[in-house]
Length: 160
Image (cartoon, rainbow, N blue to C red; front, side, top):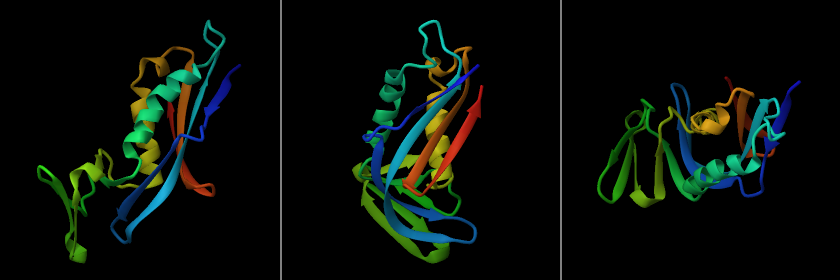
């Protein structure tokens, strides 16, 4: 028998802007009010819980807060050239002859290939799965959903 524990709090929200670019598409600089939900599947531990909600909150909340009101950029996108100086971040999109420059304090460069909900959900999952609480024997899988609004998003799943 297993349980599917889920946590989606009203404060698991971050508002940020991003650029999405791939081989055949480009979405101009725009933003969303993202929401995050975490699901943990497993059996009860000796404390009669799959995982303590507090353990999820103390990891997810700082992540959400760190992204809130920032421009998020993908570090590993081959279509962007990102340069950092002491105070600025410069983003060039050579094939479109575009360039953006903004204060470094307003930008978060994430270790992902694109700033899509798919990549963001994987990013959150990768951080959570490194935590000891999620690597205990009774935990079977971890899923993180990131939504741009209440009708579109993505879920990344990891099985232990």
